[in-house]
Image: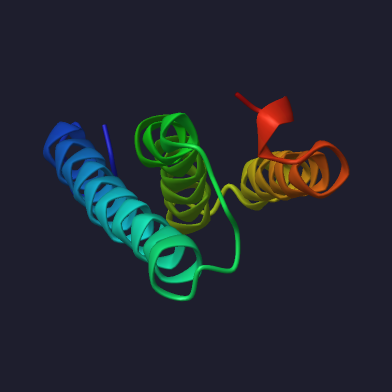
Length: 112
């Protein structure tokens, strides 16, 4: 029982719903931003020659994983779980460094 005489369950449901909505919005925005950035760098500016398989991997594997990580980190921040948010961001940054380091060292053929 809380101080106001209620068991607190409705407040927990609202918080969970808000966290889920925040995660969904951040996931969609980051995923679309990653695909747009890929499209600008590869398709429009032709800075990198890639194989078609990598574009599918980027759109349906790497970009969603980055979006899931960013959404999870933001939900942790909103829930005031700052150590968990820092660990999540550390994992995301390490994965991005490994991904782009692999591209620089081995080319896109090493990722396919």
